[in-house]
Image (cartoon, rainbow, N blue to C red; front, top):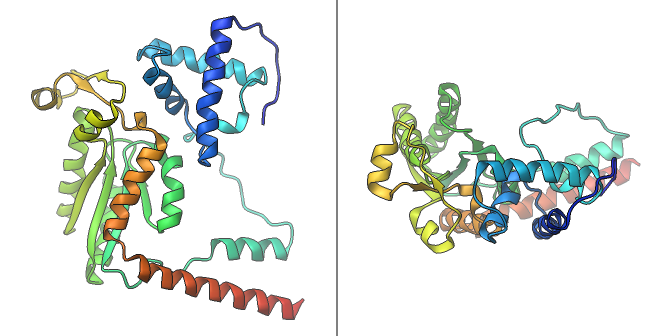
Length: 290
C-alpha cells in the first residue's frame, strides 16, 4: 500500500529511477516476495541504471526512503529483516485459533525419506526468498549471518546426528557470496560439523563460478583486507560477487533442483494426504460440537 506523509519535488532523473524501482518491486510482488534494498539495488546495477558503488547504494536508499514517504512506492514491498518486533500472538476467538491450527498443522513430512536436508544461507537478506521453499519442502532454514557461532553449530549437529541415527543420509545445501570469506565458509561449516561427528554432504548451490559465468551478476572488488583474499585471488581473480545479485526466481529454482534431487516426492505426498485427512476429521469434529 502507498501512503503519503510528506511532499517533495523530484527531478526527472529521480522520478525515472523511482519508476524503475517500482518495476522491480512489481516483479517481486508477482512472485509473492518482498525484497530488501540490496535486492532492489542489484537489478538496477545489472540494467546499467546505476554504478556498482557504495555511494550509489546509499543514494538509492535515500531516494527510496523519500519516495515511500511521498506515497510513490508501496510500503509493504520493502522489508527490514533485522529489526523485527516480537509481537505476542493472540486470537479474536476460538474459531480463529482453530483456523490457525489447521493452517499450521504439519506431520513430519520427511517421514519415510532416505535423506535429511537443511538449507543454510550466509545472509539474512535472502531469508524471505527461501522461506516459501522452506514451507513447501518442510526443510530447516539456517541463517548464518557470516561465520556461525559455536552454539548454533553444536545445535545444528544434534539435528543431523538424530537423522543419521535414523539411518538417513544428510545433505546441507548452502547459499553464500562468491568472495574470500563466502568460499571459506563452506569449508568452515563442513569442518565444524564433522568435529561434532556429523557425516554429511555440504554442497554450495549458490553462488558458484559457473553461475557467475552464466548469469553475469555485477562484480565487486575482492576485499583484499580479508585474510583469505590471497588464496581466493589466486583461484578466481580480484573480483567477487554477492549471492543476492541473482534474481530470486533463479535462486528458488536452484534450491528446488537441489532438494528434489534427494527427495522422494511420492513418499512426501502420502504424508501430505494424511495431513489433509487429519484436518478434515478435525473440522468434522468441530462442526459436531458447534
